[in-house]
Length: 268
Image (tube, rainbow, N blue to C red; front, side):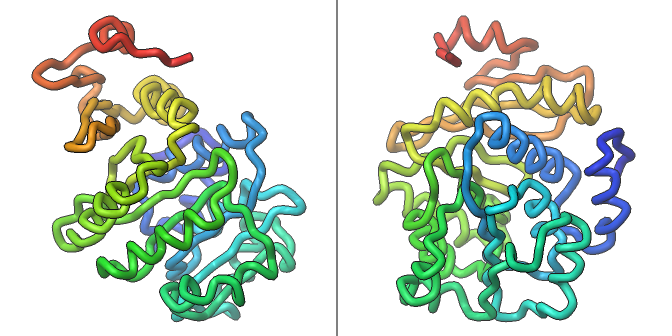
């Protein structure tokens, strides 16, 4: 992983580079999205399904305000090991951590027992649990029950051929839940939000080439795509510094203004 001038990300890499499952692009995208939510004053808790060694959880926890909480669901998590790490890195209090050492499918079936007593509203949800079709579909069901206004759901291992059922489950879920929208995919992640908040996050992802080049020296292409149910999304890919940063079907472009002219985009 490359060096970075962002103190938080540099500290994160120094602490978790050996165990994090986020690549450098995802680390920066997560950090920028959490910062965007803070700028827009989007409140709420955070949920992670699939905790592993707590590296992603620690990064997410750095964005928590005093009364916000981090919910962790993983039947294999070891609280004695990872929660002190999360608290030390992020600075959150122990009472801001809520964890369930239970399978997420079971929690989804009995969410009124496990989650409703806490009255959570999640502004950021990261799903990286069991990668079966049923588990991913169930995790999305659970997430949509408790997502906050302007909240974001992030799915892992999208278009990973070794876990193809994750992508299969996502598109099936989107087809049957038209109020949920895939706004972007890239670097193994998919980003979903409620339809009425598409423009907030679409504007962010469309401007990622400039953002990441400026803050991290990372070169990214945004490609404009759609699927059979006419719900458009953008995809993200790594490129060299001299390559075009935008792509529409059959054409690559150098600037966002060219894309706006061709597609008649409204980013207001």
